[in-house]
Length: 130
Length: 134
Image: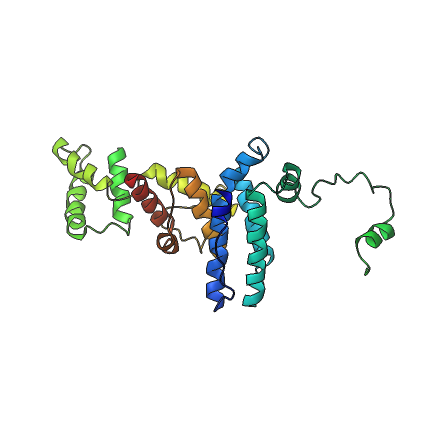
């Protein structure tokens, strides 16, 4: 069931921005329709509601809403489809789903690890430029 | 009382396509509004009009889902005629609302129907149609 769901042949290039838009909506609908089976697989019934997962998916899509290059959009869609098929065929585990899609910014890191550390070190751990 | 409110809904519904019957129904309804009680033989005609437009509770459920999705405050007035665009929803929001409705009512919406939905009333009518087909 899982592999047949994800065997959507994405043609290599979107002809125009409108077609890329359509593909994004198609992907979003496919993802929303597979949410019930995802909740079943990872037993998320008491953890999160389907509407929460839907809004998480929508916000992930919105993060890249400013992109106008159709090739970039195709690439992002490919990665998203790959991620969705990994989740649906149970290649991930429950804590991955909870950390990445249910919890907020910090994910599974509770944040007590680095609390006493200075700001300099915090910025240093995050990136080279600050 | 319920049939009166339902018939008033059918007047404002744009998607009802029975043009000649609507005009005659307007005449009938104006007669019944003027008096406190209406003769019982009018009831079947008014009830027939309800089948054309969406039921009020369907519209209410749609309104509730829309409000929750777009995070609108409770006092914001959302009725059958509000377009999703005026409520501040972009196209992704509209698709998400349709998905929420799919989950809520257990229906499945195809592509063309999903494209044509712009107002709350259209969404409620489409839901009614799909529920009848099941």
